[in-house]
Image (cartoon, rainbow, N blue to C red):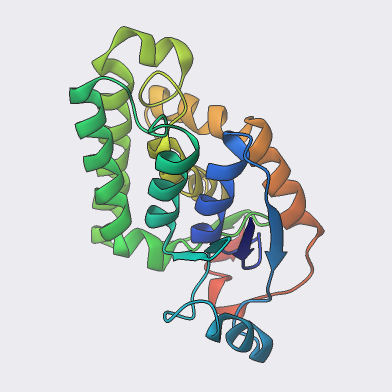
Length: 219
């Protein structure tokens, strides 16, 4: 199995596909491409119609889009364990992931993932709304069932929901975003999670710079 990703410092969607495999101990070969280079598009042309990362290649199956990758891995290799077992929790987890997958565009545009940096940005009103919504969502998930807050994961055990919000936690750290105590603890949980620490180490070893993702000013 091969997972094609972009630069670890910047590619939040790559992190999601990579983290799904790492967190559930599924062996794979990692192939990293430099974002927006000529070779990036040439390499992807033959494996995905979208020319975007990540792409999972599993035998004769090519899966693009991070959510599709997570679903595929959960169904084929985990007997569905990528999602919470209990029906209501699973439905809420899927809704939370869908919200991240299709929403929060202001936050994504104004706070690009940049693992190496400590930056300061002046957020628009809409981006601030996005931050507040995520803070609220995390608190609701963590307090909905008592075991969730005890473990620190959004739905008691690590799930696709945590995969999808891990890059957001990294963004909040980079830009020094103030959150509720519960959400701040969740950010620290993500940052100290072994596979995420491994990803960050990889990002710190990179030297490529993507200017459009160097938002804000140093702090």
